[in-house]
Length: 278
Image (cartoon, rainbow, N blue to C red; front, side, top):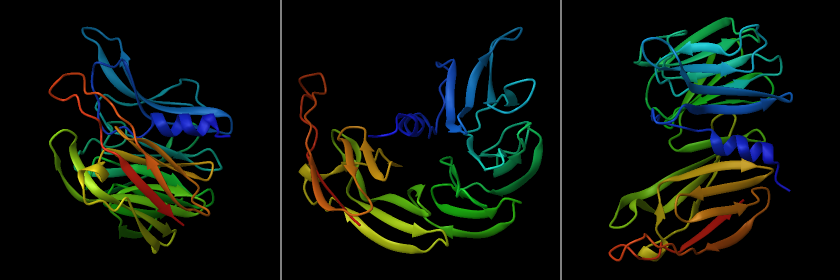
């Protein structure tokens, strides 16, 4: 049975944009030692107008949440075994207001900044991972950074794609041969699934959905999550593929027909034949 807590946290995190039509906008969320931690862009009522502020909920402080700034920051968080919080993002006024850098900061459980490190900004899609022991990893879609808990950089390695940490290994997906579709926007004919060790080296690379016709194309709007030893490769119009990464050699067919809602675009979505090998 899938753990609902893990699935919930994975689904609602991972934002890369912000619209002011939402009063509360979630950057990231996790449960640590039974307590929820949330990074929110939330409405703050102030005179003469309403503003939005980035807030960190969950710290052991008298005044909770912790104010981080008024600008969009695309913040992400990780928490170590001693309840220290590691924040990464593009910028936030309380820590850094220079938008040309990506930052990572370590806060103690009371919200006091222990250290801040700056790196070159390569992408707005940023994520952070804690290995459960003594290392922090930041991934900005193009590069993977490895640091110790004192903020010392160990290495930077190029790893383009969407990446998740599971069982001391990273799993990465990357679209191959991207092109435009008349009805579905950007699509690709295959997806690379790559397993990477914590030294940043490739263990293997597999190809999902080797396709050469319109019936086998995949929208590039996909995401990778790993929950309860299963890989979830989800997409905005083909659905969810559920694969056990520890011992799998199966091909999955996931066909779904969906009407676009008018006569001109009233066509089925594409069929997708997906395979994951371990």
